[in-house]
Structures are given as structure tokens and as C-alpha cells.
Amino acid sequence: MRRAFQIIMVCLAIVASTTTLVFSADSARPNIILVMADDHGWGDTGYNGHPFVKTPHLDQMASEGLRFDRWYAAAPVCSPTRGSCLTGRHPYRYGIYFANTGSLKMQETCLAEVLREKGYATGHFGKWHLGTLTTKIKDSNRGGPQSDAIYSPPWENGFNVCFSTESKVPTFNPMMNPLPVSREAKKNVPKGGFYGAHYWIGPDEHVDLAELTGDDSRLIMDHAIPFLESASRSKKPFFAVIWFHAPHTPVVADKEHRDLYPDHPHGLYGQHYHGCITALDEQVGRLRATLSSLGVADNTMLWYASDNGPESDATKGAGSAGRLRGRKRSLYEGGIRVPGLLVWPDRIKQPRATIVPAVSSDYFLTILDVLDIETPDRPYDGISLLPLIDGKVVERDKPIGFQSKNQIAFVTDHYKLYSNDKGKTWELYDIVADPGEQNDLASVEAGRVKKMANEVEKWISSCHQSDLGND
Image (cartoon, rainbow, N blue to C red; front, side):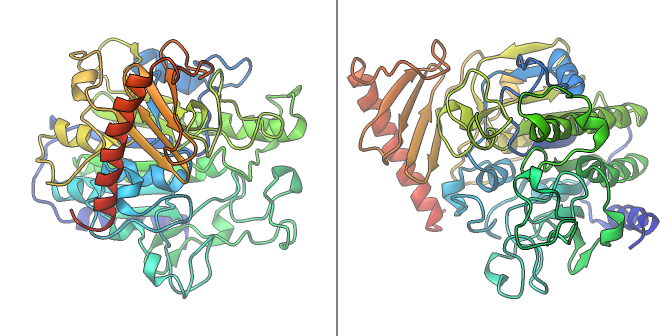
């Protein structure tokens, strides 16, 4: 399918989408964009103190909007966090316990469905990872003729326009198996051979492989921008989910971006790794420039976060969790505390940072609160961040719970309870004074541990009831 035809289809999909409200160009309802990187560690931004990574556009967002210094992904791996963004619920409520596990259930209320009903144009661009996108051909990790039970594509979850992959792809020439330096080149596929994934734009429709060359973050933005432009011309508010693959392995960068890091301590692999982060950052800048040129930047909530911490340990991977303990797959801070930013000029007049904890599950209730939409009657793990955005609160009134395999964590404004054996033993940290989680206070704060553990038990029981379908 040729590029011009794709753009025409984007426009037609938006015009054809049903609406219940009509908006004018000066509508008070904001546009909403959720941007997310994949495995982008807390320490891998200039604004968080990385010694050499080049992220000027993210740094600019941090200097102009609201910087969340304690932004959490709902899980230490990708699929569960992605579901939390769209449902406002912890992954253990809807059965996506880990990566490549389960799918987004039709019984869940997806944010895109809610906003489409309220007249928003809705689009998903990039990595989906919440179910398979085809039952016709073998695709990516799980797609194919045997995947009916986990088929849950974005176009069946409220998104009118899509340019989506089921799972990971290389961050450059995304359909082709890269060089071994990427560390996740497929062993049984010839170098330069088909990687085994597709970009899907609708039921049984995928983009021709020949059109998918170059930087993957740029390809994603190439498809997101026409959607934004068409919605703006139609004077419709838009909801865009832009989920980059970078810097998830296989990390590949072109020579231009590798050359920005000539003396990387991790050699060629590090050049690829931070090169693809800088390439992603450039597309964030391109997105912001597009919003400005369309005249909609001030009335757009533009969020940025990562789905979890950096891959692998520090000796094998180039990614950084900064001063935080742990990495991807861990419920220590380095696995779940990630970059978190919000730019919304109409509402956030003065830049500032906050240490109030926030989590990806908060998107859902925050956006419903902004739009004065009634919350569906079921348990939610997120809260509305609107009072925090408006500077009216300085603490969070609801703890954040985490579960992942044998690990459990429970985070309040000041403390964090952690277990790696399903709650048989506990560690306790003053997470404000000790973000690196070096000083376990469990033995001297036994009363606090007991109280928090009791809260955790009730929360886990509530999640289990949801998972059984009881709400």
C-alpha cells in the first residue's frame, strides 16, 4: 500500500468515525497524546543527569512543563504497563500478568473507547503488545492462526486509525533482521532477512515491507502526524497513543546517530543504544513542532513516559537507571520508576517538578476528570492527577500497588514495602530519603510493615476478584 493512499485512508477514517458531540476550533476540550518509550531507563535522559546522552527535546519538555520525579510504570515489563495506561487498572485485574501473557479483554473499558464516544478522533501508532493483531498469518511473537483467544487489536479497542505492531521490532529498518551487534538479531534468520513482524493498519491489512525503511521512531511519527493534521483540519479533538519501540532490543541506529557517541563506554552496542534514544528524542521534537504549526500545542496534553526500566544489568546493557536500584523485571525502583513528563501550556503555566508519586494507571481517571466524564463503576488503581497538575495537592492519598511474579511492592508518599517471595518476608524503605533502597527499615519499623502488609493483602484480594470477572 503506497504512502499517499495511507494518508487518504487516515483522513477518511476520521471523517467516517461516529461522534456524539460537535466541537469548534476553540473547544475547551484538550487534545491528548500519550507518548511512551520502551525500556527507557530513569537515568537515560539529560534532565535526569546522564553524563552524555543527548535528549534535548525531552530536556526541553522537562524545563517547560510538569516533571514527575517519581513517575512509575505499573509493571516492570511492557505489556502489563500498556494495559494500565488504557484502563486505569492494575494488570492483575485484567489478566496481563507479564509480557506476552493474556490480552486486553473486551470487557475492559478502554480509554480510546470512552474518548471516541465523546467525539475524539483516536489513533494508535507503534507497539501494541496487548494481544495479537492477526489470526491469518504468522506474525511477531504470538500472532497467527492459533491466536484467536488472544486476538485483541487496537481497532477493536476504540482506535479508528492504526499503524501498529504486536510486539518488538528493530529500531532501524524494523522489518529486517539486524546485525548481531543488536544482541537480539534472530539466530535462525539470515542477516537482513525478514524479521517476522508487520505494521498493521486494520483487519488483515499491513503495510508493504518496502515502505518500512529507516529509523523506526521516524516511521511511527510519519504515520502519527497525518492523523494529527487531519483531525485538526476537521476541528476534532484527538487522542493519539504513540508508543515507540526504542530503546528495546534489537537496538539499531544509523551512522548519523551512532556518530554522536564516538567514545561510548559500551562501544558499538552503546552507540546503537543511545543513538536510537536520540533518534526517538528528535521525533518528540518533531511532534511538538507539528503541534505548534497546527496551532494546537497550547490545548494539548502531551505526556511522555517509559513502560519500565532499562534492559539487562549494567555490565551487559548500556541503559541507565541512574541512582536507582534494579532494572527491568524488578520491582525495585530502577525497574518501575521511569521518566515522566507532561506539557500542557493552557493548564501548566509555570514549569515545576514534583516528588508526589504518580503511575501509568493514573492516565485514565485524570483524563476523565479533565473532561468531566463519569467514571465507570468498577475498582480502579489510578487516581486523577488533575489536583496535582493544578498545584492543589502536595501528597498522594492512595498507595500504589505492584505485583509481578513473586514480587510485591506497595508505595506511599514516603515509604515503600517490597517482597520478592510473595509476601513471606518484607523489606521497608524510606523512599524519599533513600531512593536507592540501600537501608532496609523493616526490623526497626515492624508496626509500619504490619500495617502496610495488611493493606497489601486487601488490595491483592481485590485484584484477584477483578481477574475472576467479578466486577
